Image 1 (spheres, rainbow, N blue to C red):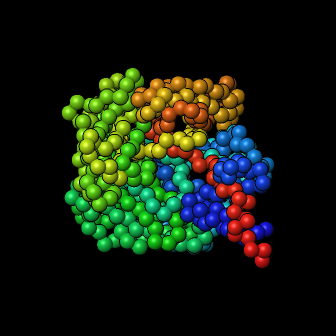
Image 2 (cartoon, one colour):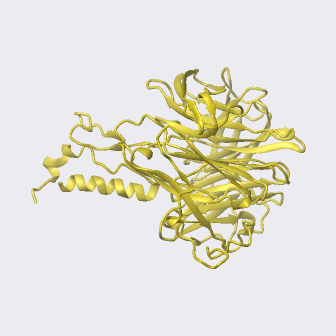
Image 3 (tube, helix red, strand yellow):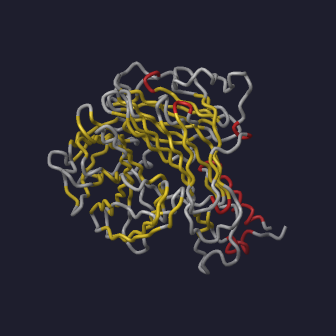
Length: 519
């Protein structure tokens, strides 16, 4: 093997160390176009992290995992498994875990737990067939895992938790995350009615060290305990935001970075005034953002945004509805000062039709990078529930969301530019059923909210895979899962970023005549 090919494989391996994704086989002579265009190859390894879902003894959690079928040339070998992770408490963090789990990761008898040697909690048998596992109470575990070979491209896991009683009753939904080194969470809070925990999960065999920065309406929130947080190997650490500062901020942007190692990160929100859910990380800072999937019956919508750069941001606010893109009267724009968090009350902006928010530089304004998320409310008074919609990137090739039910799932597809066609595939069910498929046309500048296809003869739950067809405009997507209980419209929304199931690998042979000296 020549040194050029070796360097390409080394680069792919370095990428895997940071992102959790890698194609570990170099392309053969036919793997790229004759003009040297990089080949698209399936990833061969990917990591996934699921935080501890709840501290409630009455919580019911379902974990559903799937690798979508149909990735060409992904091989036949491999596996996809998730194992339990130790929950470790740090200064100021309190998960409410029961007494039989100690802070040092030992069990009641003092024996050190090694999740890597435990029997897998979830294990896939075949691509295209989802697997579900249920757990009850506060002991439902955090999970760490890896998929390899044919199970790696597009592997996804959803955890859905229902809490039927208490101040923070509701549905919590989260697509488990890949490890990374940088996360943004606009929409968090340190006010007294909120209990917001940042969950940091380390998939590796060595400890990671993370920093948590908070930014409010006046800029950085002073904190001396958010730096240098240790995250032990293959462990999950929950950190209560209100323990990091004495300031009670209604809207806070959380920035999680790592000094060493990598983590998965998500914010679990409990609001005594309106329910509970997960706040997933927002898309990378950009001057233009799309926040897809605001439910038609939303009674209150609040936009929270943060300017990450050195320049202020002036944003034009638009709603892509069922027929066209409009500018909401009285909420046409938002000014965000550099390194500060700003918010905008949008009330019942959808007016009975599902929609998506589009943010772009105001006319004549200078583009500036921002991150953003929506807090969405359904219902009123004591019969209300919250969910969060972070900005999400367009689906480049494919995206999958698991744990859809025969009733209660709504798929929102947004085409902020040109018209797009989208193929939606429903997988087999966890307990039986035949896959189904349907293609939708999404008119440019609109949001199409549909009841997605359901597998024939469905038993259990199923996954939805979304694939924009070539030649159309960009598509952003989100899934709403509604699980009402006792007249409370409990729900959760998951955005569908691209699954990064393939990677671009340059054609090494093009450079051999220049770089290979024969040694």
